[in-house]
Length: 421
Image (cartoon, helix red, strand yellow):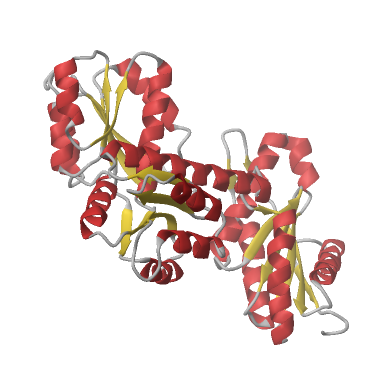
């Protein structure tokens, strides 16, 4: 959860901001309507805010003093203003701010919060700067750190490849062309052997004006090209554009791979990710578990309380599974009220313990909603071992689930493949 500071003396603007913030479940906002209240919030929170949305003209600070206050605590800020005073604007733009937004219509609040969101993402973003010039590396690194981006540096392509291998969190590489040991062209080519454009972005930079240099970079897989020398604004704009494109690619992948209601992986992704895991364990002759979980009498919940309460019941499955299972376990919503889980590196005894714990959590769980409080149980079927393929393990776990349902529900049944591979 990221903390932001919102300061504005207009109750209308604050209402618009609060409404817009409901779209972001990863932001915790603190509100002030004056310079004095801002100082109090900063004092109470030790000045620890990830970003700020600040009104330029406050009754007790009419000349942008609140921006200077935020800067003194190292808080990146988006500045809001209802009027344009050219002299004051130029003065503010010289400070460490993310953007300057006019409060001329409701869409400006949306735009301002998008800029805040980009800054909050920067805290979890890592960029690799590759240049044999210490001066240019320092220039770019300084700009990135002002954006609160994590920065790694390399002096040539060989050092860059080593860092990329050690730091899979790198999402963007900024590389010069002319470097010793390995130049930017070869580095770009080597990166693209492993990473696609939607996985890791590359911005090439060079002082050479030859069209051939630019063309070769783009042909080898660079996403963008910037001529040296460049301004801070130019490189910030290009970096933000490339990071936003990566975010868009990630959102598209999520839409394709995840269930809209729960955010869990969907059936298709389960097979895409599960088959390599199954093959690996089959080669090692290492047993694994595939479990099917089904909500008992789910139709009664929908028929009695409505589909909105049924949706809440389905979402609760995700909550309980995420708090109980390991992050390495593959969890998916197979459809309707049915969920499938794949676990590796686990014994049969531990598998039974885990799913008995899950069954008991559902049995004891009370779901409180504004309309009604509901309780329900689940039935669980498990296939433990190694069958001839993943489909066979799912089929066996389905049979075990059917056994649980037929023998009273709210229980765990486990079966093994008749022929262990």
